[in-house]
Length: 518
Ligand code: AMP
Ligand code: MG
Image (cartoon, rainbow, N blue to C red; front, side, top):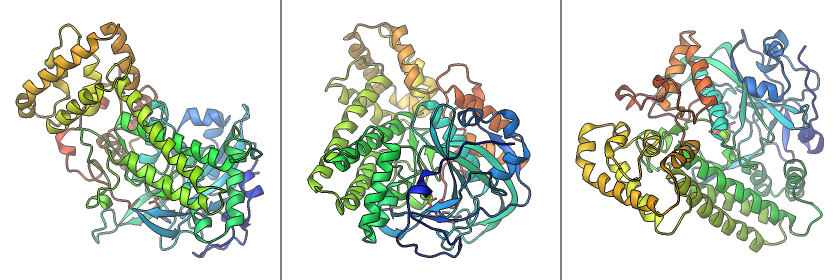
């Protein structure tokens, strides 16, 4: 018997639409709609995260039970679960898109674990809700597997993220037009159980402001602060601005963390922005192989290039400004909210320089370092240098004998290496001179650098290989990737999981380009 200690504050304290009607519609004056998951044919547990299970005080035995499979495939609710879909809106690719909501996510409630921590459980792909609009409420195996693996990989990299408890094949087939090219096909369906302290997004606030539901907006703000921001007192003057300040700060820190590891979210719409600063909604995300600030994995964004690697801080700020617009409809002062955005800029700058200093092994960031870093980023882009491999190799450079061959493994192409050798040598000399200015040893620097520059990232081609194997019922690569993801900074990771992108993956769908069709 799976036992979880539910305490569902979101539904208990905020108004909901309790009709249970699934028909797609506008749902004014509520924050959620009651909706039961739609059962699936033949659920099979494909993978789970033992860390997340542990966090929920679930034993291995419980995870492998019939109860678990039934509950986390959406086939049966456990005692204490209250299933609902949240109402939210959002700005998508820069435009207000109106009401969106959980179209295929169904929350199961909040549990309190043995440590007193609150965790919300949510199924993704569990069927239709009033927010499904023209879609089916389902998710395919390939995108569910990507979400499952990446959530856990991000967590172990030390990056705030929603977690993933389980990946369950539904046994049903789902129709998708993977590339929006008029060739839909049936694909295996799956359901991920996501876990986070809160799934509230910027869009939950935006929809209420847009619809003029100001009283409810204020209620949601107070609820969010009361539940998810215990450090802020609702009694204090300007608590709303203090809170927004903190949201700005967390969001700034989050995007800097993405830049640190070369993660591109791919769809930073305001409905995909977590109010508590987590990475949320893994869709057409990707990881940088050869360094390219202008890269996005999302084919839907190919022309506009709104959500590329380097654009992420600016887009986060733009999203925060939209949140500020929404909050301003009930806040005592717009000026105080604008100060939050200024705080975002300051946090971004300090986090960015701190992060870059750490990546390059510098003990302190000085203004001149910006030039050093920009020069090498420019070179890395032109010479198509692998970002992850470069920083691990850079840690092995010896200050008194800088040697470019140490970095050779980070280059994809011999000719590009050859053509840029002189420029890299010049840069290395400059880097060595910079290192000489600090009291340090090669070994101490290498140790520090290897704590912030991962050896293992969930490269796009690796996730794709895991998907293709899983389609053949081979789950071994999922296990291997999960194991590597647990220790991403360790040197001793199987070589096949740290290899640079192979040539076959350069233009392969799923490896270099992804659509939102998931
Ligand atoms: P996303 O791009 O995944 O963040 O989704 C944007 C909006 O579309 C959200 O409201 C989703 O719930 C909804 N949505 C995406 N895919 C589906 C689907 N298969 N069924 C129902 N709603 C969906
Ligand atoms: Mg979304």
